[in-house]
Amino acid sequence: MITSFLKVNVPPGKMKDAVQTVNSILGWTCAQPGCISMAFYEDTNQPGTMMIFEEWENWPSLEKHIQSDSYRSILELMELSSEQPEIKFYSVADTKGMEVIERLRG
Image (cartoon, rainbow, N blue to C red; front, top):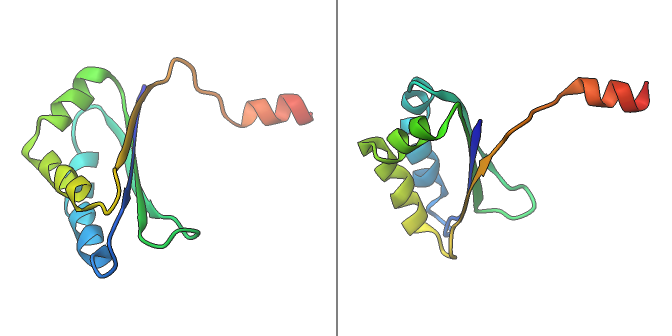
């Protein structure tokens, strides 16, 4: 699994536009082959800071997404950022869930 993390600092007065931009591609992105999920959040401790998380089955699916016309909206959002945007891609080899807590807290 591949995860993508993007953090942008949206200037005052531009958050509504930024949210509309992300909302405009959210459903389309989630419907793409290989997309597991996409979500965005505003940091409650830092107003104007938006974070977007995506999960993809594999690199080829993510690469196709990045090359899509729809991804231009993400690039425009990055350009809107009042500070250097932070973007990271993680390759996840193993995922665990509640079983870890149950084993450790048993």
